[in-house]
Image (cartoon, rainbow, N blue to C red; front, top):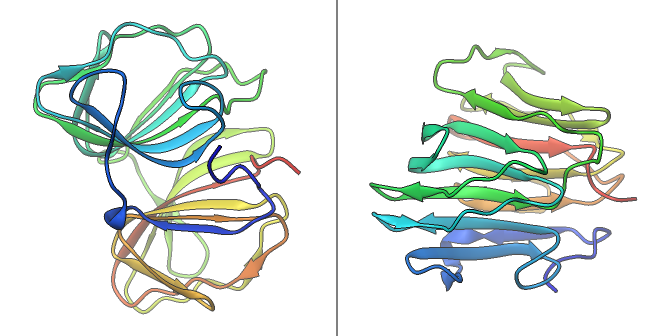
Length: 216
């Protein structure tokens, strides 16, 4: 079990983490949170070597993917860097990557009523004005759960805020900082319920952020 106490704040710089082999040759993982080795709740950075593939499978309680680098593929299409995917329970696929790719992957974390299959290409989607000078792209929303990309221009300071239901953040590019430290691209941060903080940026920064999903 890894980082399954949701009352604790967790920060992982994945650049410093080692790749761990998966059951399929050429597919590697950096676990961020994991309930059991090959089942249950899991959040990981996943790498497919060029030409690697995974056998056909489904995902109880869903699979959520953000393509960080390269092109991720399955029977339904090719998904380049910047693509956000949600594969609900019952969706089966045999994923592969011809050129190789790196993904942020979350497993076994859908609400039972969340059955939407979602594909968003953030490269062509329209960001809208968010808080302050930030630009936001909503990727998915179901009940209290919300997933978005947020782009902050250099020198911006987010308003101090407190996410009642917690907050999970992955820094895609640039760098974040707050009262407790600095977080370069590749950092994953999970703030527990009711923690107040203020992010700020010194350079243009893009993050993936998810709220309203952590257990109370």
